[in-house]
Image 1 (cartoon, rainbow, N blue to C red):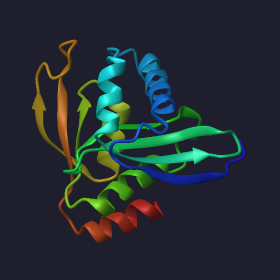
Image 2: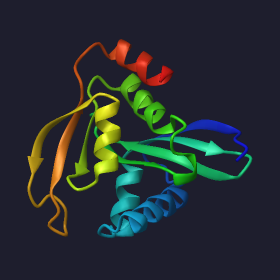
Image 3: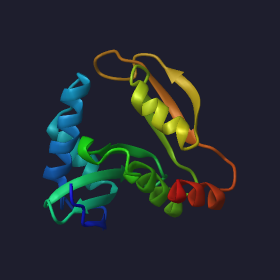
Image 4: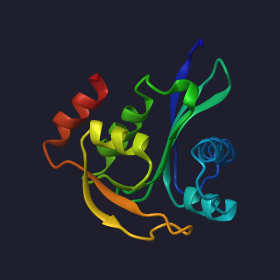
Amino acid sequence: MSVNVETRVVERGSDEYVDAAWRLKEDIREADGVLRQRRGFFRSAYRRSTVYLYLDRTEDRLVGFAAVRRDGYILFLAVDEAYRGHGFGKRLVARVAEDHGSVTCHARATNEDALAFYRHIGFEVRRRIDNYYEDGGDAFYLKLGEDSITDKLSRLLRG
């Protein structure tokens, strides 16, 4: 895999790359076997978010994205399976943390890979929420740890 990756930020109100983000999210959803979201819901949430992207220009492909509300809540975080393990997820979270004093998200209680990723980079489980998802699935509410955000960013970007 040759990688010529660039970063982009899509400001609120734009739907630039929304179709690529939808496809990536749906590919991951199908692989994980979870409930399908409504495309209109996704598009609306995307447009209300600031979206941080990594794009592979060599492959003309979306590597990953994080769609984030104004309060630092990550609505969607996805990295293409072919690019996992190269730090793109960490760097997306670090970029969110640069712009927000607090970074939070939900993760499906049964999604061990996501939970391991979030814990590895310093998120803490704050609470479990029963029946959070439309299909009745439970979620954990996670928050990036309160230790020095500067130190956290430095560690995320290095490792």
